[in-house]
Image 1 (cartoon, rainbow, N blue to C red):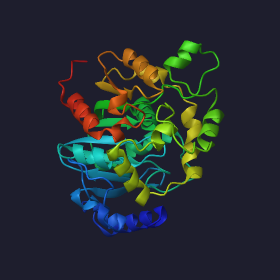
Image 2: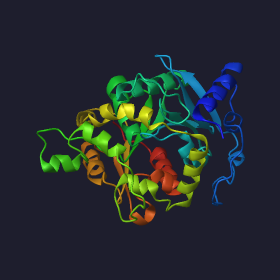
Image 3: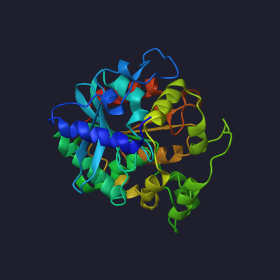
Length: 338
């Protein structure tokens, strides 16, 4: 099994040895095929069944060579994963959407197959990395989707660079503010899905050892992640765990900055120029925040998955068939005049 460092080196070698137009097939980069634990109709049985899946790199403006995953043809859609997540976990979502779209998933710095770096660990820098990717791909306009911290990265992207490159945008289950402001009322904390009083408390929570056995009735995102109660999710996690070896010390560098930002003003004042959708679920702690954000953006769509529909923080990975169908429905819908 290759380590993250050796995978990154192999990928860099493939890209360097090739012209910019030459793709790097995923199996060449990862070094072998992979058989998923569960045989699921409509999803790949092996990695080699996903024809056209490529893994590439690009250089950011501050000198970091980040990885991105790409597959399919058609209108582009760019996904930004949540904190600690990566393109490998999107394998099912990419497979389904690549039948009709050009699908691109960024591995943020310190995540996935991208390198661990000691600098640039702020949401603003992550949004500049996203801008660098868009510029690298020469994309004039695309659909965007951010999950968890990835939503924050896109909110920052919109705050700093506007919406000229965005056709439509979907946000999946991100709090409006992870940590509270001192003057907020109990209701203001609830509707922004606050989980801690300070960013330090958030970092401490992430360093707390997970429970030995997850409670199936818990709404804790850590316990919901530990539950392998979805075969597609079990497949994508097994694939990611086989090839991606994450380093908590590196990943957590961005969390203090991430937890310190309140996105209320961006949501209230800067999402009104493009069609917007919000996704959440009944198992999630962020339902109130998604309802609040939906009310702030006139004409936005709100999808709330039931518990039976795997409606927790990982809904897009646990129920990729429903998520991709709902997302495509939103993307295909005629946009109202601004």
